Length: 504
Image (cartoon, rainbow, N blue to C red; front, side):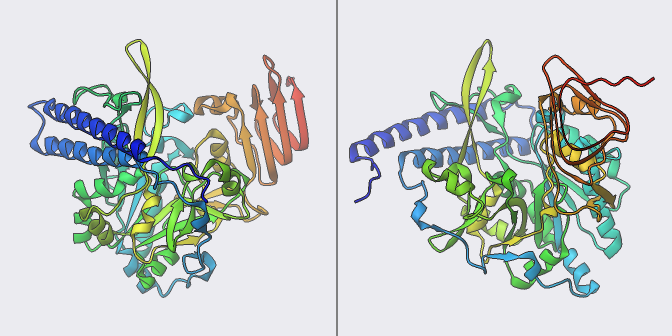
C-alpha cells in the first residue's frame, strides 16, 4: 500500500472551487489592465499586450490546476538514466565533413543569445551583456566578433538574435547600433512582460498598463518560443531558409557555434539537442536529462522530492547537467507553438517588493526553455567538453575569464595549452561581490596558470605581477587589510590576519 497521502474528494472539490474563483478574479483584473492601455499606443502594441495577458492567463490557469491536482509531482521510481541513444558523447559524433557542406549547413543556422538579464547581482546598471569581460570588450562584443569571424571564414550569413526583456531592451537597442558596419545581421526582440501576483490573494500587482517596472517580470527563457513567433522573427527566419536556432545564455562565454553538433543535428534529423557537460562539485544543483516512463525529460532540483535531493546532487547517479546550450529546429518551434503543445513545468519564483511603505510577497510564474525537450521529436543530449560551459555569474568567474588562463582568439576564449587539467576553483568573498569592488582590489590580474584553488575573504588587495600556484587561501580579519605586494609568488599558502608591506 502506498504511504503517500492522497487528497480526499472533498479536498479536491474545495480546491477546484477556489481555483475557479481565483481564475475568475484574475480574468477580471487582466481585463481591467487591458482597458487601461493608453489611447496613443499603436494598435500593434495594444494587440501584443492583449495577447500577452491572454498567454499569462493560460499560464495562471495551468498553475492553479497544478496546485489543485496531485499528479504534477514526479514519481521517483519511474526515473532512470537515459539510454545511449538519448545522451551521446561529443567524441562519438562524426567529424566535420568537407568545408563545402559545413558552410552550406552554416547558412541554415541562426544564433540566439538570451539577453534579458541585468547586471544587478554583480553591482552593475543595465544589461549584463555589456559588462566588460576582456580587453575592453563585453559579452556582446565577443559574441559579435565570433559570428563575424565565422561569416568571413566560411562566406556565410549567420544572424545574431538577442532576446531582451523590458529591463534590457532600450539599452541594448542603443548598443547594437555600433555594430551596423560589421558583417553580421543583428535582430532584437522582446520577451513577454507579465504581471507579478500577490502571494496572499493571487491578484496581479499592477493596476494599470503604465505601472512601475517592479510590478512586472519577464517570465523566464521558456517564453522564448512564443515571443519568437509573436515578434514575427520566427517566420522571417524560416522564409530566409534558416532551419536551426542555436540558443545559449548571454553570459556563457563557452557557447560558440560548433559545426560538429550542427552537422550531427542535420544528419540525424533531430528537432532538439541539449548540450550537457560533466558535473563537478560546483554544479550539483544543475538540471539533468532523465528517462521518465520511456520519455526524455529535463529534471530540475525544484522538481525533486525532498527525501531524494541528496541523490539528485550525487555525481554517481546523475553524471552531467544542462549547460542551456540548445539546438532547436525552427519549423518544429512553429508547429508546437501554433498547436499550443508546449506545456513546460511552471516554476513559481517568490520575490519581495515594496509598494509605498509596505513589503509584499509576490510570485512570478516562469518556465525554462530546456524543459521543452520532451515535446520535440528525436530530441537528445550531447555530452560536450567542459570548455563549452564558461558562465560568468559572479566576480569569481570574472577573475577566471580575465586571467592568463585564457587567450582571446576572434572573440573566443581558448584555454592556454600549458594549463594541465580543468579550470581552478575560485571563491572570492563579499568584498568582491560588485564589479567596482573587484576592479579596485584586483586592478592587475594575477597569473593563475598553475592555480588549483583560491579562496579570498576580507579586505585584500593584489599588486602587479602576482602569481598564484596550487592552493592559496587568504583570510583577512574584520577591520584589517591585506596587501599582496607586487611580484609575489604564492604557492600552497594560507595567509591570515593582516599584512601590509610598504615599498621604499
